[in-house]
Length: 410
Image (cartoon, rainbow, N blue to C red; front, top):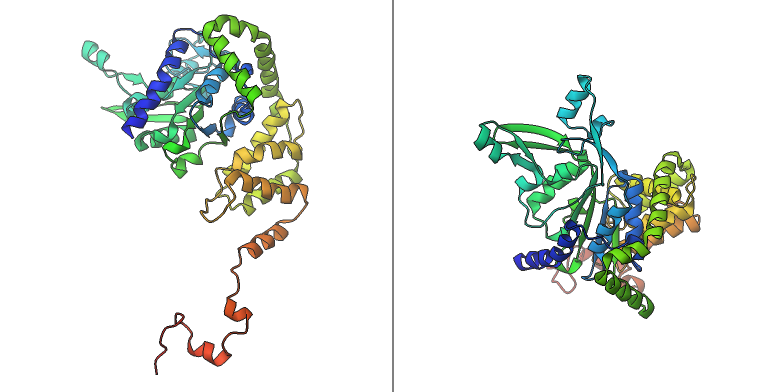
């Protein structure tokens, strides 16, 4: 486990250093293939309530590159000056306690424009680094207790990116889940009690060969995507050429893609406004819930995520009415990781979801029809003796409860 973590950190170090040094990230519009992953990220940008994205795939498939690229598509945000929590000047749910007190007192808030934050949670981070802790420097110099914000505070109103999420320590998993679920982070440290906003899009990537995710973490991600290496020679060649050109001159390569990037930015801004007016018919909602019920999805989180993702996709396509095709495009990403795993079932989660979706949406079958088909396929086969006539009724009764060949006694 330690070796896996060390290798994961080493692979990410070079690219992280380039980004922090001001080097332009790889243009999102120049990523070849991986359409599901790119769509999942864009849907979360349009509607943060979808609940984030989990991407699982082999090494070298561009997972971290795409995640870091999407940040350039996000608009700048207004934040309160001299505030450590990226507080919003207008939304009280995204304000720290200090900012709310200033608003109550009637003071004018000074604001500034800033890029949407992308905060990466390293595997070796401690709980204090993630949640925040006592400001030791101020305590020693001034003798007063003060709070030093952690990564969750910095990620407020932005993206929290966890690379190699399946290698994350269990203690950090619990902390991140609590913050992601409630949108706030509560810290109790050395006599300090503080609650601050921690509303972020949680993006996780990982290699399935290095371990499985805990079920409670898996369910917290709104969308789930499995990716693999691009296989067609043309796409592999184009991907290699793009990467080579980017490495030689990042600024020039980004400038070539500037027009495409700006067009996509405007499309996302329009979709964010349009999604508020998107509607899902009652009939469509009933069908979505029917699919979730037939898949034995626990809870109603899956139902809600499918509706939100379908609305975001419709808004992205320039429409305000959700169609069957919109649901079909996103239902696999929304429910594939929520199906119950059966080692005897040859179908994977996403394949199973698509099969049930086709029965309800395309074939027009009812819940009862599909449930009967499922029960028939799962019914155990009749014993060979029963099919051939076997023993007579009296003999069967006398051997009831005994294994085949066992002595029944005198």
